[in-house]
Image 1 (cartoon, helix red, strand yellow):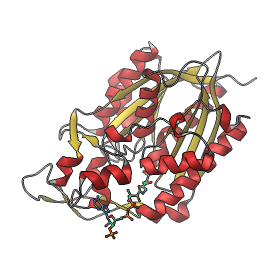
Image 2 (cartoon, rainbow, N blue to C red; image 1 turned 30 degrees about the vertical axis):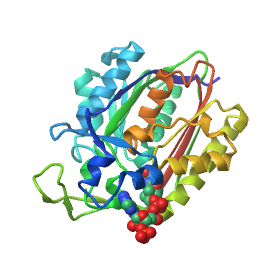
Image 3 (cartoon, protein in one colour; image 1 turned 60 degrees about the vertical axis):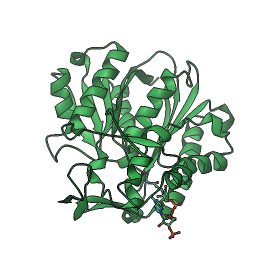
Image 4 (cartoon, rainbow, N blue to C red; image 1 turned 180 degrees about the horizontal axis):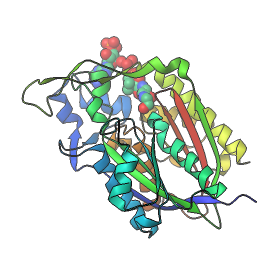
Length: 327
Ligand code: UT7
């Protein structure tokens, strides 16, 4: 019998600065009405100029350790999912390792865009099941607004910064029942980062133009791919777990657009009430979206012991992923 692996604790960290749709109206050619009706977003968090991705990651990681009642020195594997690291190296995971005092931990980052948290959880699960590691700290942290041109209304209204984390270890009951990881590199150009100059009025006076890479996105095509691949991933993960859609108690999806979430619910014939949505407060935080949403769903008791939970993600790559967890 393979060991059961489950979530022992959850944590989050969200920067305190809120940027509302009305604030954005003053920066870009957009309106609160357009953003709310087309995406469901009302506000998002923006990291302060001195906050790095690793700072967000460390705080979320510490919060998950506290929740799991486990000290950093008991962690032997750290994986950070991010596409907005402080720098190419050292890895965010190594920065976390130092901060939490996990002296003997293996530490590395995973780059799978908005699906990164689920890719990281699935990777760690294999190591714990084989017995190579015992307690893993999985963090999704993004300072993704670093990659935004604040005058490009097709992207600047969508994203926010934040981090979420969990501690994974062996459990006696419940745990991760199945996992599905998918990719489609052929559609990679639908969302990518290009070198160039961006307009950053938030960080500079006036229309400050800075040389920085930024996100370019083909929204409509991504929308369709997101709906299809998230629905497919949920169905495949349920099949592996030998469950029917009617047995799902809560779905925690990637929060890219509330209309995408509604379309996935429709496709799966699942009532929208079974899907946890918090995009209104944070926008799209890439890998961190599901991590923060799962934390909030559990802490608000939308997810209770014994529930069947599905996590499902979609993002640049293209990559998609799903996990079924018995809580
Ligand atoms: O994280 C995972 C990857 N990302 C995604 O999965 C995102 C998927 N895509 C989407 O969520 C949506 O496609 C968007 C929210 C990005 C765009 O929504 P849409 O309903 O597909 O709008 P659109 O791009 O077709 O634009 C409709 C109109 C256009 O004007 P015209 O050509 O009809 O005159 C746009 O120029 O809305 C205009 N528009 C805006 N207007 C006000 C686009 N962005 C804005 C804006 N404010 N921020």
